[in-house]
Length: 501
View 1 (cartoon, rainbow, N blue to C red):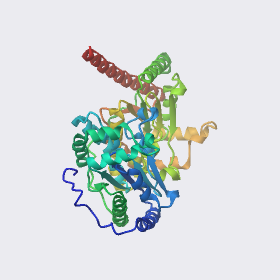
View 2: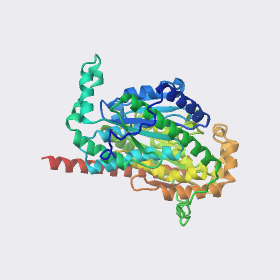
View 3: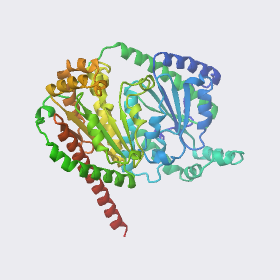
View 4: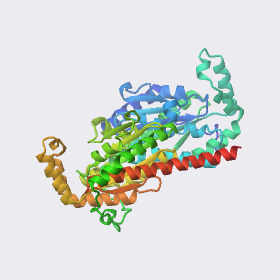
């Protein structure tokens, strides 16, 4: 892409327009996107000293400032370093009423890699895909611009900035290093751009030799792309599309599960405290090693998720974890991609988070109750797998527990809750209504378990007709999984230490 670029043969269609007139056209389109609940994300990347700040200023000058945000991503702080690469970009995503402009985007770290290895490119693109692709599929318009300057023009910009009163802020080592290493940087940038250029989120290479023309070109291209994108999305919403199914219901993990397994109270009393103490020690060890733990609890209503969580965390330092009981999304959460509200709750390295119901609601309650379209919940399986893969590749632990009970046990527990004054808050008319869809939910449970059970982020199926047995099973799986993860970490560290000797 960059290799074939000719600064003499550039797009001049918008040269005769006034920047302010283009800005006013974009302002009108901003209101159209807002009215149609279409979020817009604009990435401004490129060479250092290419004039990104000026382009962003011209791009946003005429827009309603209440609904446009410019996010400047400097070097990562300690909190951001303690999360996967794309975590901080998830936090700043636009709502369905906003345009967000990223000065340095989630491609920045990849563009400015010092190693420039094929393996790093592959891994970086996996993480970026797990962010960008779901956004585009969820009808966010993503526009990507790379501001391109020649080596000579970049050097002249650097020399001009050296005379600026704010040179200490405007110039960094990266500016000088890129210019000195221009050809190698050009070759690497080209690889990244070509590998991440897609039909729905293409890169636009814009010559920034003439900054005024660069601003007009970016404005003009955003106007064109936004106009086409709004029409495409409006048309797509009017067309009823049935997605091609990627799953055949050939196996039922729940049907194979022996729900009769139980444990005597005396046996439970004999082991529970030791298991809880061991779990607490492992969580502390993970904390000391900077390993984040993500736990998901799903299952039938009244399966005992809350009780299992309570016993799991009994001896764990409460300062080290957060528990989120996931309810229906708020207005703010509905205005974002469905994964956004979970990304904002993920712990930094060393922390632990427990979700009582989770992002799997997309393929469970939202699927069965019709809150998500077939297209939305069908693509969610892959989106969820990608997100969990990013977490585990970062070094985090992801464990998912599914507590299963039979229909008769659920009915008995519902009746018990209604009759016990200290428990009747747990039962609602909606719980009884959901029982009428037992078969639909079981089909959704089975498909979820089959399609999202991975080696790195496994599902642990817990027979929960007997609460004591279920609680011990959760603890034992938690301990085994965490021991295995910590053991692998130790093994890798030992190998690294031996290699360095």
